Length: 206
Image (cartoon, rainbow, N blue to C red):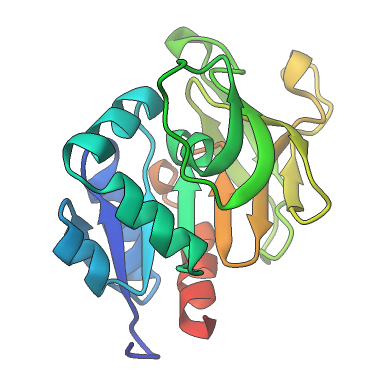
């Protein structure tokens, strides 16, 4: 690994691949799209973008990436998941499909589509532990939230108790366990790349 510019992959089966690539590049990484086992084997860390978690789960199997990716995460590869990526990294998902595959890496239970359907997208300013410079403006689109997490999981952000938050108030929406990071929101969409810079730093130190 180049310590200064680690090579980070973006899983390119579905989702905001271009936006994550731009944010990681701005954060100081070299970036490749990952669709094959050979590409997965090259990278120092991986981003799992948003999209539809059941579709991504099925595509991982189709592209013969499911077990290789599970193995690399289990071996300690730094991994960051946003929205659907958070769902895939959880040990257990509520309201998922029975045939949905989980990658593991985060000892927690997530609730899929917790914030509601597409029309119920939600935005909120969040204080995120480990990220300096004031609150982040977070965009949630059919987002999950963390229903429960083991003590091994560090909670980085919860939804503040505001009138707009409704049932989401107090819910966990950003976590870290070792070198695995996840957010229920889409930092790649807001132009604020601090989460990606944090992940690049995690990869550098791994």
